[in-house]
Length: 109
Image (cartoon, rainbow, N blue to C red; front, side, top):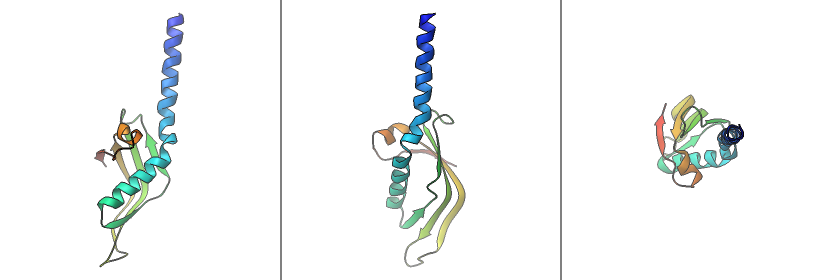
């Protein structure tokens, strides 16, 4: 009985950690996402800071959903919108985020 109690508590702690990780790293993920995308494109990428994060829908990877996503062109057609979406979703490698490495995107929807 004591063994089951220890296992139950360990699973509960693991569940709480997995649930809280996206919230703890949210600012870091938003900044890293904007930086990585803006470095790769010759345009300005902008999106709503209110993003959705989940470890459960694509475990062990991180599911990221971004609302009001826009790509706006630089010169010679400055200000033209190249791409706009109400919501865009991606699956990211969570370990690359924690280690501070370049984000590796697994899939985009």
